[in-house]
Length: 406
Image 1 (cartoon, rainbow, N blue to C red):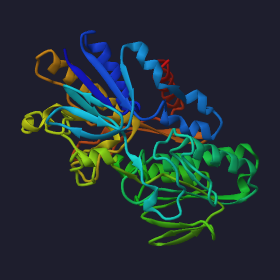
Image 2: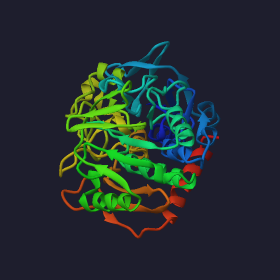
Image 3: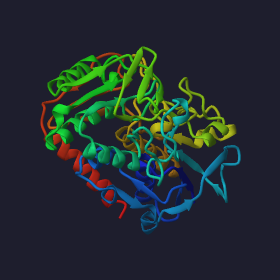
Image 4: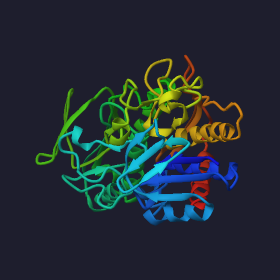
């Protein structure tokens, strides 16, 4: 009998747990360790912003996974003893034969003075507070606060800002700016607002190549949404309502931001924060922290896998594979296949290819959909025809994700 522990119940973690439960017989145990009691479908947060969804539509209680034969440990991981193969939590110890790290990345708002404070988990109560007003785009309360501000404001400057360094789902910057444009147009007051997006990237979503980024900027310009590339946020002066960048400053009436992120503390404490970006370095295909050859088997690393935002996977052409729910889900399929093979005494054959598709919503205009390989040595992503059908595909994925957790 094998015990597989999964730390984290986000998109990748829960997909891995459910996949393993389906793939393995009942004599094997699948355990999820998660500090929160509810989880949400994070890609739908922007649909909460424009009213297409309410918070209850995109969140589910984690208790539902127990009915699928998955053990749930509501606890906070504190450390990992890889030699003994034990996850040490605040209240108990969880032994494992195989471990999947999927805790995501914690918000690191302290890195930018003036950003709102709150819990690091995006679905937590109190995860964003209004100061200025300044809103965290990766929290339900932040998105609801921004929606309320847009409803009551009569005009002014709206900034959407990405922090320097790594961030979750880079396209959210442009998507938010364009959804704000749509909300204001529908309210009949768009002409009284200026909308600007500030990013440390020269072009939006640089990981997908210049062609995608240039198309995003041109599409934003069609709705008079300005894009400022190579701007690096240093602080937010909430008293004066000014965002301070290395390159200058910008006044705001409403400011929405992508949060800075950092590795969860228990991962650093376990000695797994080894990538150039401070996250967990994994074999890019096998997704084990030791790689397929398992050179660190004496220390137990050969049985530790990592997926999603917690990972550090360099791209051959520079930068890192983006942190997104889509990538986490694709990686979950790989570790499910490989762990299932190892449990059965077979050689693991699944590899993460790096190929992915990204649908970038552009407000009331057709989305920009790009497909390509993040692990390719060169080449821009291919832009597919501008069809609204791709947004419907996103909605179908959302429905499937939610239904599997009911």
